[in-house]
Length: 476
Image (spheres, one colour):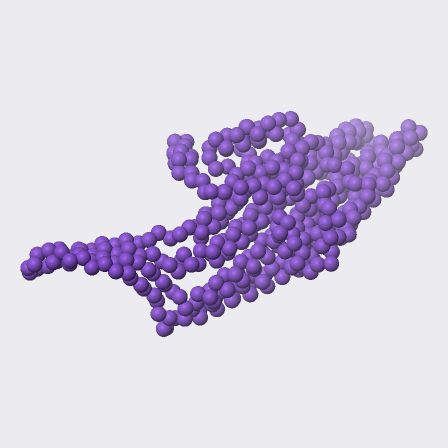
């Protein structure tokens, strides 16, 4: 697309922007939900001025090493797919405005010209309004309000999805960078061992097999470095995409290493119930069930009324006499009594109800699975840190002492160092797996694990699933 065409699209979009009453207040609920659960801010960009302000804020966040919190904030501000999802709030707000607006009356005029005297023109005027639509406004408003609340929670849920994706991509990139450093260290050790082997092979102290094995180890080390560099490129681009960055803005750097594994494992008590209480997608599904129940009642109540128009009709006849009077039109429910509409509404209600119940089961299962997985990842990472790595380091230190005492050869020291580096790489993978699983669990419970309120969970602990979701819906 040419620059001029893009500029024209931006100009037209800005000039056509229409603000509905209360639209900003409605999106404020999304902002507050994200702020409460993640301590991050989101903005709904509706014009080019807001876009430029966002870009300035994003570029300030990209200066210096980008922390994981900064990466999440950049994504929340700059990811255009998220901005597109925010428009769901605008669509639902427009539907609500439409539902509570009185329909326009219709007006028609017709003229008839006689072919015989008297020659006066017969003119007829008619004005009418759909009274049924007016009577249904309070009911339609309630349904539209619930659909708007569901859209607000759906948008919030998609925002939490993006946060989890950014965290996972960030941890992957951190791990790739750490692994590259370990591969380079191993490569240096292999290069030193190969140089030593070359000299000993030339002197006839080692045979061709031992030299070939050392060459193979050095080649594998160089390949590992190349593959790690490719992983870093892929992981950076994933994070660029999530943060909505391109061009010079992609020249950012992140903090070098993964955060340390916590000294204690995460308390798993109540997480399952907490997820049921605060998951936004569950709340959206519950609201949809309630809205469809009201819509079903609306369909049943007005099943026999297809149209109900009141109006005024005025006709000026050819003899200049004017006749004026009221008009009334109603659709007679002779052939269609709304059976299909009711059946469709009932099926939609049952479908939403079953989908909600299935989602509750899935959420509970997902939380249990991730809690078990996180416990396992924590045990593995701690085992590497407290057992395997210290043992490998002791072996290397003892190997150095034995080399100085001429008990072992240089090759045995290089082998011990290589084993230590391999264990360090496995530990980095274990750390990465732990933090990725933790991010997935945060997403599963619908909020940051560092700010979960267990008292809130205990307060709802005796409630049923639907009641817990309803309570969370009211509070949000």
